Picture 1 (tube, rainbow, N blue to C red):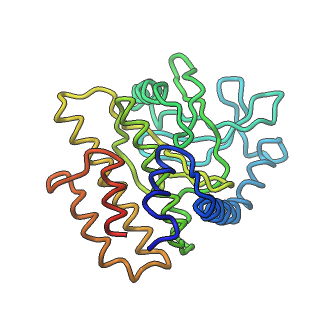
Picture 2: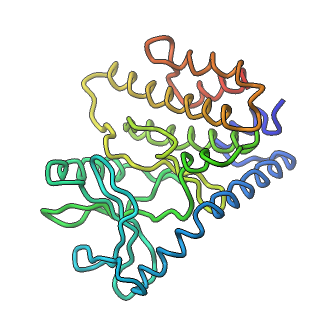
Length: 272
């Protein structure tokens, strides 16, 4: 039986834990994750601080308002760490990768504007007129994908991550949105062990039908199950792997699929 039992996982999804031992286990896992995220991101974060302070020549200016440095270049969008002139407060800016994808930025903004949840990246606004960009929360930490490359996760840490991923998904699905690109590199772990979903570049805010929306929700949850499987494969709990694979297989939308985060959470508690 996991240190974080089903009750704890449900509490993380819908309300704060009330049992003292559960709170202690959650706090311990959160602190451990925060230390790991800090360790992986500290050197790069120090470099970004120097660049944004103007101590190197690697920065650029966006919209005449922000000093910025590129931190990620994707197929559809580019991401920058930035700060406003006259301030050291760090933000993130997302632009289209090229003019052909500029129309995706307002669509992403429309989705993010519907959501306010601690497990989803904060959205501050759409700016730039003919060259639109998103102003977002800058999350100090690392992606789950980066964390999994060189770090083994304990069972409580895995439970803490998947419960927060599912809480974020529950929030976006209730807001009438599907993510459509959930993977470990679109899950951020911050320096206090918090988990946030990022990169809503191909999210859906409109659906052809109720069946289309249900299918996309199930696909998001299937990808969450795959993330859970990947964490177990990579973690210290690998002896449990043989009982986890059926969960991921059952999550496939063309098999059975899970219609809600809570339904997937119950399945995880059954197998895990």
